[in-house]
Image (cartoon, rainbow, N blue to C red):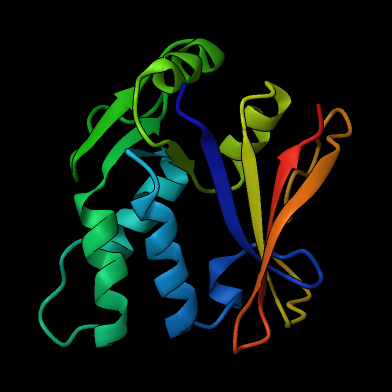
Length: 181
């Protein structure tokens, strides 16, 4: 089975709004390496639309050169979009409909290196279903004071064990966890 991995940037006070975290070359490199470990990405509608608008091929010089590896990686990636409101998707994407648990379990049963999920609401639902195999929290040394937080409304505790830790020059720390069994 392919593992389902989740990674998110978060400030010290729990904000996971991408607008509250400054772009960083090392972090974009790390994110591209994460995406390279997956056969496909899994997004909800909001995250899909946000990522599509930010990362579709842009005119030369529209973004710093150090962002290009991430942009090329995410543009080339196969994407699955969980949405009951979108009629169609493109950007190398396919809609996922029906029972979320069954659909994601089917994607995990396919052979490959793994799936990568982003966003806030979809990972909450997948956590409730016990489908995420690895969590990565990239904690930034910043207090945002506002914005969405992770796992708001989670109905049960999820105990995790730390499996790795990586520090960046910016002071951000990526911590990877697996659910305790």
